Length: 243
Image 1 (tube, helix red, strand yellow):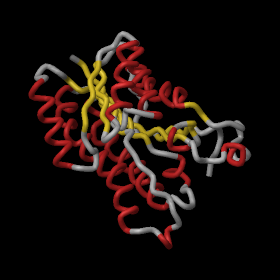
Image 2: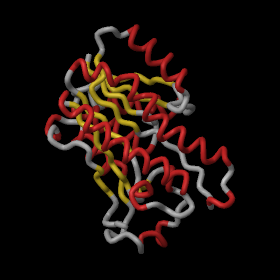
Image 3: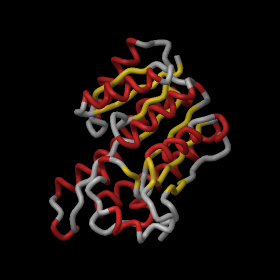
Image 4: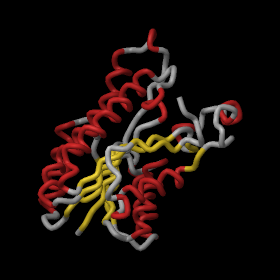
């Protein structure tokens, strides 16, 4: 059984990626979530609607012991399963000006995006290397590429993930494993629903927010065999916002 794991897969861009990967019917979809089981089950139902198989896995990507325990138990229960695709999508924002930022808001944002990448990817990396095949896709952000005021913590977390993507890509390329990052701009999801779309559209050359499906299409391409010579890349999907 070949599997793809999508962290933070219950809602938003994560859900769109799960559904898009399910459409291709190449993988059993592992939908990770932290707290919203109802949303995770809705995503699973949509995966099954596409004619694919899947299951939900509850763990906080930022909690090393929890990740180890849940994934070890899953692997023991599914000894024939091989995870070929890892989409590190889980992330949180705690926006605010740096001068007033509590230490907890700094740590929690970096822990989820950056340590979450380590905890999940590190669990599987030796297996990918042994299998001589893999696709690792890290969801970063325009904030990690150009920096966004009011998001110093999020920009730091995503910027670090950009560097990790480029370094790991070089370490594992000989084993037919690609590592890429996708950097969305303003995408219409729960995370951006409080933004004033009309004000922000003026900054976007394409004059609109992106859709989660558009990001999912790019991720599905990078996860496919068609993208085997693309690695260490950060692909912006932002309607033309560049620093």
